[in-house]
Amino acid sequence: MPPLLLLLAALFIATPGHAEDADLASLFAAAGVDGTLVIADLDGDPVHVHNAPRAAQRFPTASTFKILNTLIALEEDVIAGPDALIPWNGRLHDMPDWNRDHTLASAFAASCVWCYQSLARQIGAERYRSHLARVGYGELAEPIDAVAFWLDGTLTISALEQVEFLRRVILRTLPYRDSSHEGLRRVMLAETTEQHRLFAKTGWAARATPQIGWYVGYVETPKDTWIFALNMDTRGAADLPLRQALVRVGLQAKGITASPEAASAIQRID
Image 1 (tube, one colour):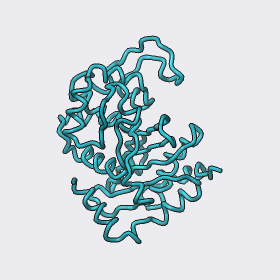
Image 2 (cartoon, one colour; image 1 turned 120 degrees about the vertical axis):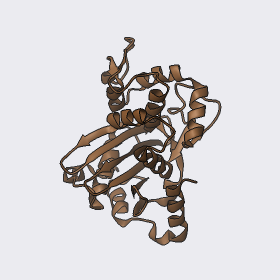
Image 3 (cartoon, helix red, strand yellow; image 1 turned 180 degrees about the vertical axis):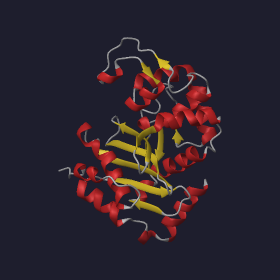
Image 4 (tube, helix red, strand yellow; image 1 turned 60 degrees about the vertical axis):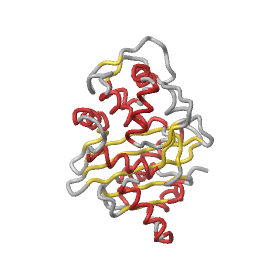
């Protein structure tokens, strides 16, 4: 088991009464949602957790897999880099922003499913199996559809595993070229302020019951790097902004970032 997962497991087993973070728990209670949030220092200490049992439970990865998928696509040279073009074939999609040519960077930001499916067709199921085994990413069930396994529930992962995977992304200890890691870093950058840089990816497992919303990533401050992974039950698209809002206010509550504007987005779901 990777070192951070060992540390987290030890924390939950040795001190079950203290694993729950009251600040984070109050945010989920205020929102009226069932979910988990793990916020961990890059070194694994301290770790702040809401709902430790759920943090260890696996759920469909949805578009959070685009983090590893980007690394794989770059490593396999099916796309040259963040600015490389992914041509649109003219087929209309429900998401208006998908109906155009994309670069790898814009496809990641728009969570463009067809864009990554076009890369997946070039990668193929066997190479995906190999990469997932090498990285030790989540759990893959068989058989798999090479262009849908991260969407249909075949590939699952826990919040704790997301945190450990992201730690390896940050430290660049995954079995990939430095150029692939650098390309991923460029596409993951979601926000830059004077106080921090945020690297993140959303996910929405709309086919699951209940539907699962994800928000995972890390934030760099002048003093430290913090990793986060949130998943929560959702009832539809209207709940999705809570993913980012809960993380932002959670990071603020732990003194990591200042995001006062996010607090207004925490509204109870009735």
